[in-house]
Image (tube, rainbow, N blue to C red; front, side, top):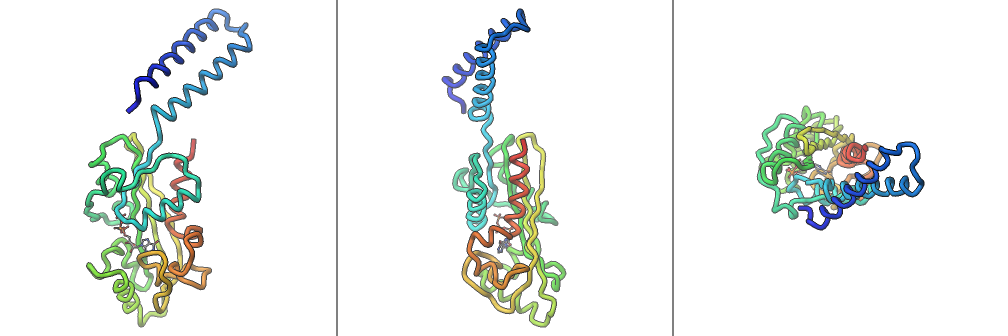
Length: 252
Ligand code: ITT
């Protein structure tokens, strides 16, 4: 992955710094300003090479959902993410994963492991599992949100949800998003985001995806599907989880 030229240049820098350090060892106290500057330069350059060439932080996003990719990219742009991020098309497509976990965390981890089996270990991989939990339905559809009602179009799925709630006065619900991140040394980290709201009496708006037209976040007078991207990205479950993920990744 790293070119010979870069390795040679690095070798040269390390060699010169070794010589400079050996000289300093003989005369530890008397060291001229020029040498301090040289050592500082060597240190910074080596660190730069290490960061850019030897250990570039590259994040693989394990999802096959184009809407999630769009939102992830928007959130990256909003937060000025400055490391390379790879999506399905960049690594030959997200493999099929049997999402049979009993929690968002478990399913997100299964997706991470599904992609890891394809691209190999030792990478930064993140996956997300999300869903809509409706109080009057005891938290359903929850982790089964993508499959609620079977293989039907999302508009029918939304209608099905509304019909299940037709006699219910409790319309409270929440979107949950959980990211699972695997680091190159094999550790797993989880980040959750929640957005509380209510289920509307009828679908509203044509933006967004999934259950957006029937979900109105608390403190708003319109559904997610009426809001602009920027408005959704300020309060959504995905934005909350993304913020936590990014805080972790940016930690020195
Ligand atoms: P991947 O597993 O490939 O990531 P998926 O669509 O299968 O994509 P999930 O298993 O996490 O994703 O299913 C989550 C479902 O919850 C999703 O298909 C939507 O119906 C719904 N959902 C999640 N976030 C949403 C959002 O921001 N707006 C509307 N619906 C959302």
